[in-house]
Length: 301
Ligand code: ATP
Image 1 (spheres, helix red, strand yellow):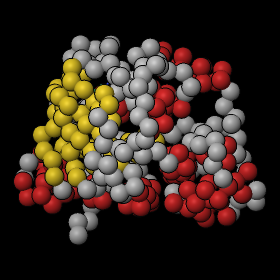
Image 2 (cartoon, rainbow, N blue to C red):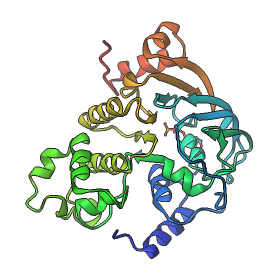
Image 3 (cartoon, protein in one colour):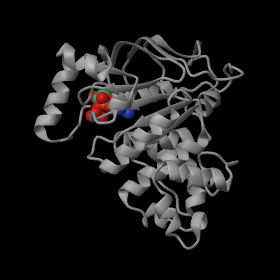
Image 4 (cartoon, helix red, strand yellow):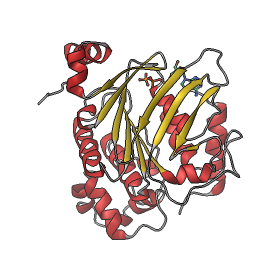
């Protein structure tokens, strides 16, 4: 692996000093970092295997730097092998769920459990190994395509990398490279387009092959092909991995088994796309607004 320990430390220092410049990126960097934060449990319990049951129980949470609660008694669960989309208005607390599931902050109240083990008692490394996280605001390293995929799993074979690139929609790109997997992606991925970077981040998460996969979409407009790819990846992984898609727009939710709608740090609705549209509540309003503003065009079958 090409990441030097001092580079990780520098990134962690940056993360600590710059609080809100790119939360999704910070989350993925922290997940990759070898060091655990002061809030994380280093000597905690581990289970022998991970089935992927995730339970948020009455979680109340305020960031240490702010007084107001971001999550106000949040409860929801993801069954092993289920794909759940979390949606809701901006600031509802969607991405905060990722911070808490990864154990980056202590809860003010309630518990989060993975296979029944409260994460405040769980070993931080165990939790990190159990979870693959894809953020759309991926940061890449200088080096080759392979170097950047191996960050997800040092033991990965070339064939597995090629398959992950295929599943992420990068087959054509790979085939166009004279040096294949060993081709340089430039200074922090400068030779890649935005969409290719996102796909590479997905490939990295796929080779990690953890029981739990979290996809946090960027709030910025996404390349629609990438959305499609992510949808396909979710479909393929369904029933093998527990998937949480934090959706800042609604187009990825159609493939989810269940949609959890958050507002003001609480679950206000839960159901399938069609059942929620029929309910004519928060989800239906968000969906119609997106369709009207043209922010996103969803074809409903
Ligand atoms: P969006 O769809 O706009 O990304 P979201 O539902 O994902 O929104 P969060 O990112 O979870 O919302 O943020 C919820 C609230 O917590 C916001 O008020 C945000 O400013 C605040 N917040 C998020 N991350 C931090 C942090 N690291 N430190 C302090 N406050 C934070």
